[in-house]
Length: 196
Ligand code: GRF
Image (cartoon, rainbow, N blue to C red; front, top):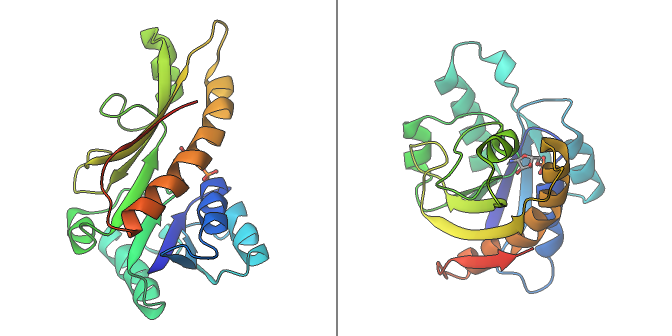
C-alpha cells in the first residue's frame, strides 16, 4: 500500500511511521507533504529518501477548496492509497475527508473523546486529570471525532507543565502510530491500547 504522510512541523511522527514501513510492512511511505515550506520534517523526509511536496496553505488565502485540490493532485500523482496526518495542523473540509473516508488516519495528543482541538496538555492540567495520552483515529468530517483505532496512556505527574506532558507523550505517539498503521494496512481495526 502506498502511504502519504501530511505534516506541518517537525515531523517526528512521520519519521516513526516511515522507519516502521520497511521490510515486510504492508505499506510504504511514498510521499511526505507539508503545508509549510519551512517544516523541519521535510529535511527528515529527504534524509529518509522519501519524495516530498509542499502545498503551502498561504498560497490559497480563503480558498480551502483550492488548497485541498492541490493536496489531492500531489497525492494522486504519487498514487497514494492511504493518508496519515502526522502533526498536520490544517482543518480539512468534509468533502476532502469524504473522499478519503476509510483511508485517512490522524494522531491527536489527548485521550479522545476528551479534549478535541488545540492546547490539549494545558486543558488536561486545568481539569486536574490523573491520566493523559494520545489517540490515533480515522479522519471523518468532524474534527478529532472519527473511530478510535488506538490509544496510549500515561500518568500526569505533580508539577507537570504542558511542555513536560508534551515531551513525555511524544515517544508514546511514536510507539502507537506505527503499530496502529501497520494493523490498519493489514485490515485489522481492533483498537490498540498501550500504557506508557
Ligand atoms: C505532536 O504533539 C502530535 O501529537 C501533534 O503534533 C505534535 C508534533 O508532531 N499532532 P510531529 O513531531 O510534527 O510529528
